[in-house]
Image 1: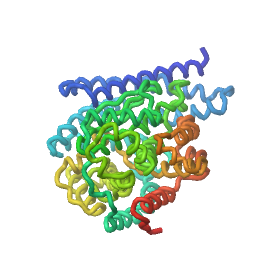
Image 2: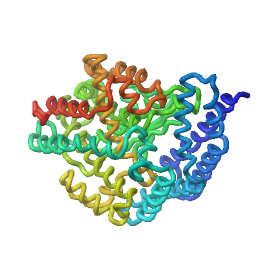
Image 3: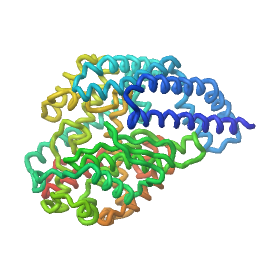
Length: 501
């Protein structure tokens, strides 16, 4: 067996074992009994430690040996370089740290659920302190040029630095703040209609109907409930999403479903083979998020989409409030721009102020500029500063997101980066297929679906986020497409309201 054949077999083995870990953690979030938490943490920790150990002893030597093979194709050589970059980061992290981190994160997620139910940060704080400490150790082990947080951000988005993220936020923040102010001062018809209530069973049926119409293959996926909506892609033939349902607000389930479907379509659209190689995995968290934000916002929040729902979907469920609205007033309601305490219930403007405050807080935690004990107060102050709101309790404040309980420091910026990429992809789709939104009136989204399959999904991780963006759109990432997208939407839905340039 040649070294390349040995490498292929080892990458396949690593991918299959990693898939087993993903299934176990999906089960933990969706249906595991609470009493199983300690044992599950030990199982996950042991498997992660085993994968880490095997990567050190088997995978890294094979990659280094294979990289010297003169017979490699250009794509094989590039793929090996990408893999080496990833595993050499893992090589720097001690095995005992990998296991400790996995076990702590498993327990922290259980503690987070309890803390949020009780709205008591103190229940979660000891676990968060441990995760911050372990994350700082991880950052030191990996290494960085400017700050510890840089090492963690690069685990999710390797093509951008914390200072570049800060610069992007500096560019959009004045526009976001001024847009938020102007929209609050200029309300339009439809914002104060009856609540969009629908029984949970009807919401689940509606979500399944809509997602199937848009392209989510339920023969290769499933929809479940969880405390925090998420997507798990084990392979293109097993991609699962979860949603959250509020019976008094259909938009919670529908918005989370469209968001997670975007992730799922990406996972279902990745090449199946060669398993374990970069082409079969997603480019980055930022690109992954661009897919969810595209389907949630550039499809699901459009007037054309709500015309489809209003005429072809909602009548079958006979909601009492349907006659109180038109497609336009429904679109205005779901796109209402006003500050909200909860990130995932926020509009497309204030949402990024939510991401900004999380980016600043986790950056301060990891860089040692903020103590965990001071986090709730710091959170509340930034919500007051950016959104003009008072946080009534921990559940609606610092405990609302699951990410830190999973140890995912560096993850939050990918949400805003994803929105910026999504707007740029949408502009490219419009240039290639002018007026594609009109087909959404019939629930038809084949054109954007196909464009994304060809220009984004098919490349896996062969390119960095920035390279993929330039290859797909002809230019580097720019926030101007996002700003123009928001400006156009507000002009349409807020009766011609003019936003600042």
